[in-house]
Image (cartoon, rainbow, N blue to C red; front, top):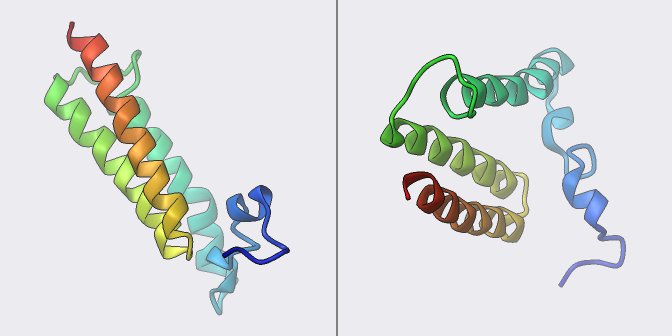
Length: 105
């Protein structure tokens, strides 16, 4: 059961859940705070976006999408919110199946 101080913004905020700022040295934390989402966005742009400069087939696009979604879900789980991580993965899987059926039809 969530505590009385639980709210949706606190779930989405890395500072409230610990996250990168709990590292003993702030220098690598700053790289991960900026670098991890930037890396995910670049991978998405190069391999999965509709206007990607690199042509990939359906299998390649699926591999990239699954890797990014699983990484995001694992991040939520490692931050101490397994329910959010599992719901995120399930919603992304259903959304991916619907989008894949539209894309291949």
